[in-house]
Image 1: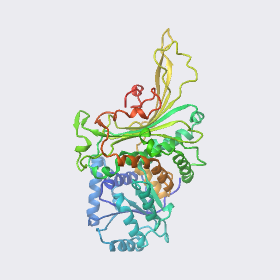
Image 2 (image 1 turned 120 degrees about the horizontal axis):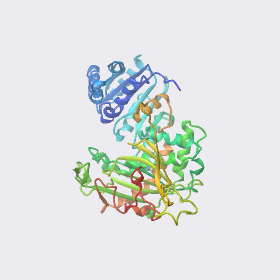
Image 3 (image 1 turned 180 degrees about the vertical axis):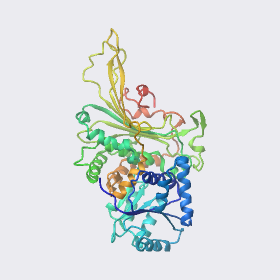
Image 4 (image 1 turned 135 degrees about the horizontal axis):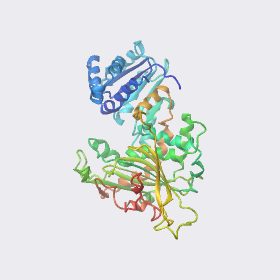
Length: 501
């Protein structure tokens, strides 16, 4: 394994939600595991003024709230020794010159620097521009890397505009576009499942697979994120980024190696092979909905229009589903169904692969009911598992069949669970781009959803609704090609029921 180099991790938005909920806990967990480089210094930047001792107290509170009395005091002491703080007041461009002097002249800060943008997307370009103007992005004495959270743009044009602004000061290898979904161990396991096992590779094509479903459902609503969500919606927030990435991993060809560029080359080929959706075909390939009031876990919850900061008459979608085709030899004719929604019946993420029926139904005269298909299902969250559904004979004198589920849970007893950000932060320090998005990936994904976004933007008079706590709006069945196809609502054997959704 490559040894991480000494470096300085500078994260803007140090006092924000992302830093408090994800980055600081992830870095501390790496400290507990002693996986951080010995000479890593962490410099938090934000608009508030903090003395170093006050900042250490704030970080200590964040970590004690998370770990309680079980906190590793020795690790906390080591972690606090790494921490520094630098204030960047709004409108004070001179602060960036002082930051440049600090990082370049103070020997406490290693010359290799990661700049992590844990700020609003609208703030990325200006911060990068100011860092570039004072020379902090030049790799004269050590490397410079910039981490940018999703969303990367609002559509294809804005993504290209944002990229052009970054290229003024950065080259592509310096940019790490983070998608925390790809850092989940189970998502990475898709690659292992496909490329470390020969068993299924001969079946992984249009000769045997009927269709593929990729689902991410949440029981949560927009909570306090309505300001962001009103401008995004489910299609931008989940499908354009996370679910299209999952689709690329499921559909990609075996790469030349597991090197970052070889992996990303194959993902881009899948995204570019997705059949374009013309604007007059949008309603045959996409469906949207918005949650109304309903019941979640026995509690009545408001509908999206009643959420705080939602515009009156908003048609922002909280549910989105798409049918896509990959026009290449392996997948020609196989539909990929992607869907995501908030305030759904369950919170889960899974990839479900349905296989075709045998070429001849030899049991049709002895079996009661229609033949049941085989499925392979990869649970991502909350159940990270692999399940396979097969048909077996029911014990007895007659030849009757039933479905059994072969279950495999990845994690063994005693194996620790890691947050996605922990591995991704280490990858940035190591300079490994494998789980980060290249610009041509981002652009190809925007090209898939842009026609749908344009049509939906023009249709502001009506949006389908669904009760909170349900599986989405009625009518999504029209995306399927045949009557015997249906949404797989769970990984349990009774999760595949034909419903009008």
